[in-house]
Image (cartoon, rainbow, N blue to C red):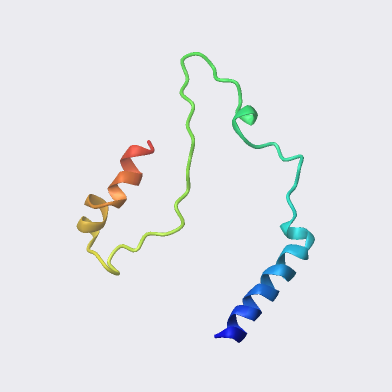
Length: 76
């Protein structure tokens, strides 16, 4: 167990030393980067979902009428 913790600590230190993990300062993202809204138009934000586990643990009906229903209907 101690070896596993040691390896995790070492790998996390090494991962942060690579330039790919360094924060980029000049990114054009955030609220101020949204285009100016046009009158009579709506502003739509698309939020992707990585995967659905339909049929693995629950049936299709249970999945879309259960807790995941919150994501589908409350973020629209």
